[in-house]
Length: 96
Image (cartoon, rainbow, N blue to C red):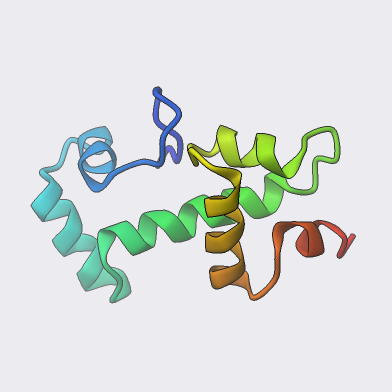
């Protein structure tokens, strides 16, 4: 599954379902059945997984990573990242 949409915004359930040639409702039902999470939550977790890799590229600022992933505001990315990982993107980057 691609994580990023062509318009550089966070992928929606409808976008992700269309990429897989599924209806949004069916996609949501499949994700819920397989993971126990809503489709939107699952997509956000996948975005954070990609973020974890991109953060280690020190050539890019945290803001650049946020924009690349489709977040309109770096602060929103930082808040979501911290909610999902328990640490800020900068703290995560400094692990290595």
